[in-house]
Length: 236
Image (cartoon, rainbow, N blue to C red; front, side, top):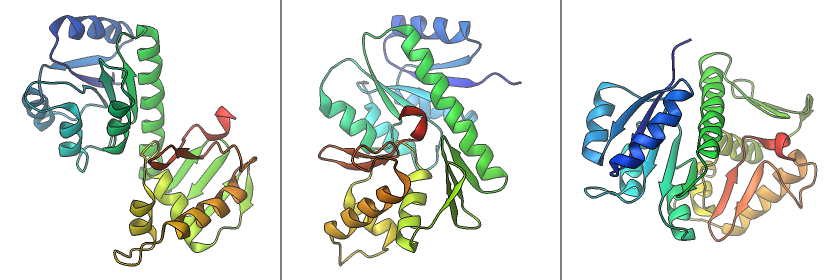
């Protein structure tokens, strides 16, 4: 099996060396970039399986870099920040980040997060290539047949509920605000109604969550909106 390629984008050489050493020891191939310019040059030659991205960089910060590449790069991006400000984590998730790790961190925690994100990325890519089926713990979505199985039992969803679930499941951990969801599902730029989105998510949760009051799939992100947790029943 080919080794997974991870690109580490950080402007501190000593941090690069430390992270590279741990990742290489786990069998990964590591590409290093000290700034956004170097990272973009690497991406023209090779698409890594995962990007570790520092938020604070001299030429273009990680938030802007992620926004710049996210339409073309669909694999996991794990942000690294030197501050404990919630604002950094919020922004990193809003622009398409899959996780945010605060320095200093336990190298074992970093490795575990890298492995988890690579595993789910591989599962989703394989689903896209084969039968158009998205598989998550306890939940299966057949994109071709437009069917949903919950713990191996069929779930009867209304059209908008199904479209909401598919929009979430195609981008796990991506935070969507209600207006984004309305544009995606209702395809209406004018008549946005937050309450409409809220009601449909409430009804969707009643059908796919064991405890709608404590959801494990459709998660509320305070002040931001909602996201899909790909671990689903595995975290319940």
